[in-house]
Image (cartoon, rainbow, N blue to C red; front, side, top):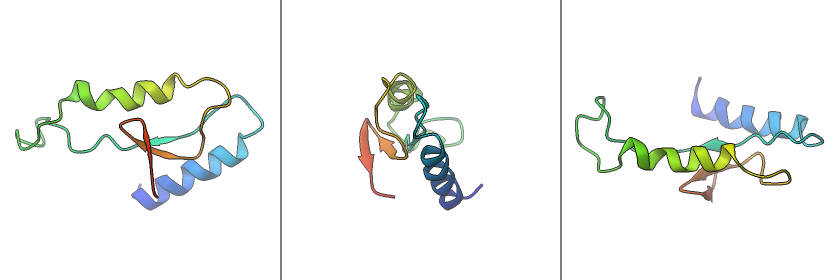
Length: 76
């Protein structure tokens, strides 16, 4: 799925679920030092999971339909 389609899906689902306690957001973890990166980045997988865990534990009424990196909203 392209990034544009994922962004659109995030916003559509967030709009459809706005009257529920379900929040729909996207996360950009950045360039992570994995086997695919061949040691060319300095961001560890543990560092990259912070925003994902934070989004998964947002309280009711939290942000929805947004894109986040390091707990901060990003422009689409």
